[in-house]
Length: 476
Ligand code: SF4
Image (tube, rainbow, N blue to C red; front, side, top):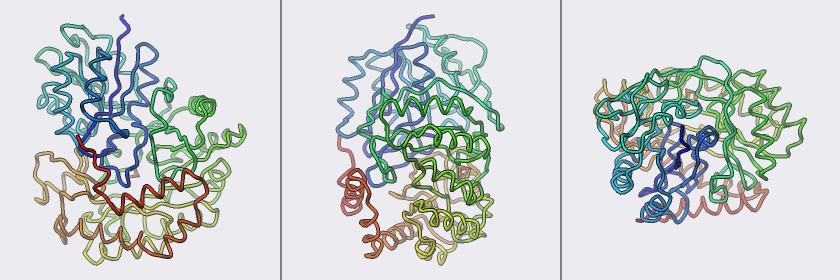
């Protein structure tokens, strides 16, 4: 078996996109962090192949520069990120790359979570797609590489769809149900870490780490609910934390979709972090029903400074219709526990979910303010492939069956609901953002809570982007 030159590529684009973990969107406030699919694949692939990384979303990257870099590297295989936010331009770019280089092209992104073989048929330049970026299945596909003929026939490979001549071979999707896994340690040093920015990080440089894959919950608007859930062993996670500590990272973004699922396992990770005195801070996403006071206290001791909660809506009816499995009072309790411990809180909201009324949409910023959140992220529904939200939206005639580009961040909206048009959803989203962020008292509080020069730069950047949103669109 030959050692291949494999390029991990986050393609350039017209705007700054975050495309990873099946949840692509236009970047808010100019932030961009590690493309986690590629980061996870870097460890697995590095065990057998020669790896290069190009992140075309980092500052100064243009299509021309990225195309020139690809020509000079002459990879055998490119694994690239795409997503619903940018797939038309991603595929155009990759078609050009394929025409000019002749290399094999493999994709990762949420488009392939629903009928991946059909997506492959529509995009002739694609040679394959990966449906689980934490598994080793990609190595089996690369074993079938042939320089002229492409990927060779063989048994279907789990979590992989690939083209063999005129045939598309689709492997079974293996979805986790709580079991443990281990993976090769991601090669953090291959990525342009000095170029990544994330607004809630406190110290620089920061690393992105996953302790699990997927989520056991089933929120109707979320692609992650399709993935099942599996967890890395404690030992495997600690090996990576030791590694990033040696590399000099100072903060961690735990990109788990719900940090703390399987409580005892997470507690062992946190206890090890305390015991090993890493001194790294961290931020994570979790759910209000996954934490309690004791668990949050342990998180704080291990370095947690910021927690992001999916609040979504003030209305228990909308939460129920969205399959969230939470109530407003649970969310309120979890946020107040964080505040008592001095952990900053971020709430994410989706304005325009089914069942949300105009009044609720208009009052959502008051709810966010009332909760005392340090940050709020107001989004619009993105009916992504594979979600129940998409099925509902198609059935009710809010969107067409054809997959169109969409952006949850709110640079535009593609669907309304029973009460609001898509344009109104967008207006309420923008109103909520202005009402929350442009309060003198809030701005003063933010300034007073800046602890590091990195945070100062990050806030300045965010404010400048909010004042001049067009300034950070990429130009090619
Ligand atoms: S809890 Fe979060 S990650 Fe899990 S399905 Fe719901 S929205 Fe998605």
